[in-house]
Image 1 (tube, rainbow, N blue to C red):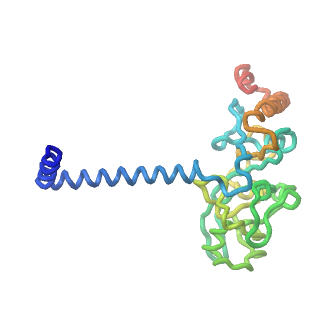
Image 2 (cartoon, rainbow, N blue to C red; image 1 turned 60 degrees about the vertical axis):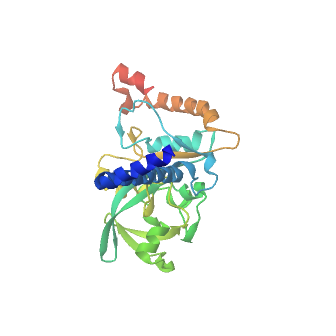
Length: 278
């Protein structure tokens, strides 16, 4: 009886103050909506697995150390360090690198600004991503010569929105940062990328960095060990975990740093910088 009286009293109070009632209901609705939005974001980014082969075997490789050089973004590595990990890291079955950058693309008479992803030649094969049409990149064809692989793989979404899913798009030329490039394929519809917050419309071989990152071409060279500009991901060999791979990887990194300390670009700093570098 007391509860019913309290409820009647509360409802009468709400009727007498319609503005307060509206604000209270709106606040409750916003709270529920925010919680739903947060859960949706966590579900997409943290709970769902990436649409790639064996995502539990993938690790991101980065360094916490003084660089004595340029750092172009979060958790970046130099291109030579990517190559060291690729060729010399015992725990890794395969290693890829990537970088997202904005470019100007002209298709016919229309030019637009889109996101491109520079990727190593094994990007698609390591992730187990197949082409929807045409072909994807390979190390043999697309990771040999600096600025020597003017080819493009379209994302499925961009293929659908910009080319109306035309299968004859393979072989068509587009202009990326004023450089003609040939479309060689379209990635599978299920693949959006390694980062759920980014959806690059095209992917270009990482060796095309001087063209795709033209504003940095005067000083950023692919063989510069002091320029961090690519993110690195690896696939662990069977039997390795992220924890068990750390010790051999740290040993390799120390060996590489010892060598880099002998190079002119890293040898002229203060003793403190040199100690931090190591």
